[in-house]
Length: 408
Image (cartoon, rainbow, N blue to C red; front, side, top):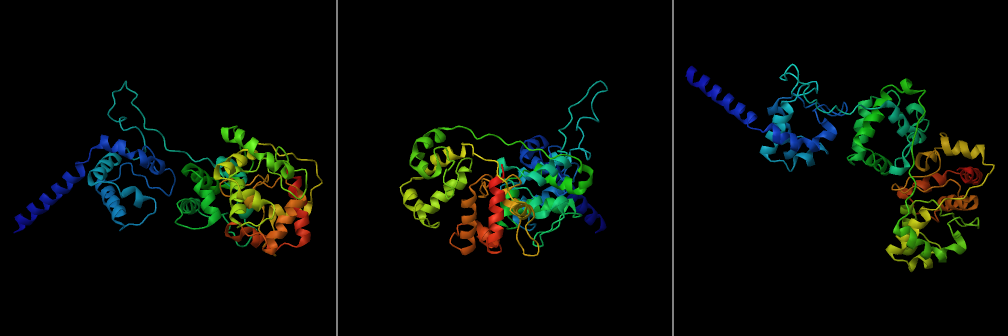
């Protein structure tokens, strides 16, 4: 009986070994291309929240992939990734990753001839704390990523009680939450927008920054903003905008203070407003009839034209009171800082639906804040503007409008 049990155990072990060894590492290398963003092309995780797969047991990798596919192990990223994999795919991937060196070095290094250099596997992405600081403080309007500093404060020390402190938080946790916002397993309109436009490298950079903000305290944040291209839509929109010129100016710089400047405004924001004027969800006696005659293509072309124009600014006095409210809000009165959505330079966030307000006509700015406060304008996302404006006094609005009009 003892011999029978021993033989049975050895047989089962040989079967398991055969299953684990049946994967094709070369085929797995090709299939692993989609895994590289998180786990690195050499099996070394791109950040501390992604496990290293290099040198991992093949059986373990297969077991986890099956669990992700079946839903026994839940993960919003790995579930969809594992769902289409066949057992052969899993075996191939496992064979590839299990054969990689634990340290991410070249697979050929140990067996290469003395005179051979071998071909090193590409290095995993090395997160940049300086890049993380720049993204945190300046955002990236070209990708519709807002600066974080307006809500979460200098080096993550939030002065607005409804926003969490990030200072002294585990950087791995920050990265995990950004990933959750990115894949929408954690819901927050603004954060879903911002994190959704971040790459995995951006998130790794942000985590690296918070690992030791003091280490890059003297680094000056940098950002490059691309110019708007001249497209066929821009050219067509110029002709169609002729009927808009009386109020908004030929180039979108309205000469009448009660009408908004459209020059340099994001096309997506302008399209949204035109659609809502047409639908009646934003009510206006002048713009309703104007927008009702526009097709979707008309709106695209007109918006593209104005977005490509340069806003005309003037040397205005501004307001220190307005500046303080814009950048810091008011903690005691639970007023959120405007910089969180409209940016340090007032250029807003395109895809997120937050408009450019820098250089806008002062009278128009104050009128819109008042409309939001009264509820006469209610086409803002999640009532964000209505909530902020409801806490502003008329004096606050005057000072804010003065400051925003003076921004360039």
